[in-house]
Length: 114
Length: 113
Image (cartoon, rainbow over all chains, first blue to last red; front, side, top):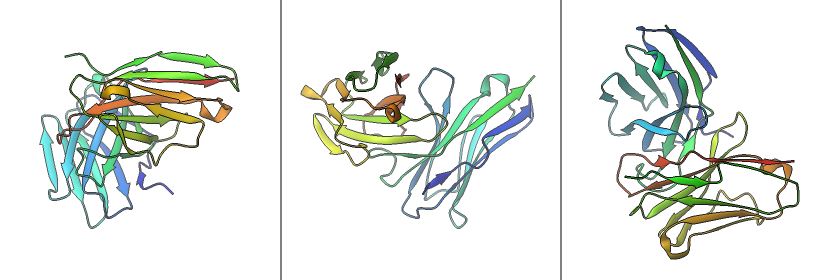
């Protein structure tokens, strides 16, 4: 049974608009969450993370929101750019995000159209 | 700083053959991880080394998979004998243990025919 779920396989957004990628999790032991971005034929690249003691973390155009009661997190990209087109993976850790294995979702393919 | 390097980038082998994948982590990173992504599915954890010791190998599918990290530097992942369901992209990642996420390599795409 999947512990981290990304229910939207794909998302298409116009350049300049906001992209919202969603992720749900089931394990209440998760205490750290990460978003990775992956281009074809490359490995995932760390994008942004959030600890379970926070509800928001912002880094430039990227903001991650965490709703622990709903076991839901989202990644907001604003404004979206064509170079943001990639597969985005949500991942969770029960080890603080520094060691130990990550549990990944299946990914959401974001297409940003000029 | 060199990133995480994986070799080969692609490998096509026949069922029953042996394949060895190699990962060179970022220099100084004690933590090394192997993950695998089967087509269209999530990236799944295989195992975690801290230096040369296996910290967690709970994700290894079965005893056809053998991972080593002699001397705590590079790591190899051997699949022997390979089966069709072993096909996928094998990613290696490393970290220093700080709270900023892992650095992944580009992966090895393994195809078993």
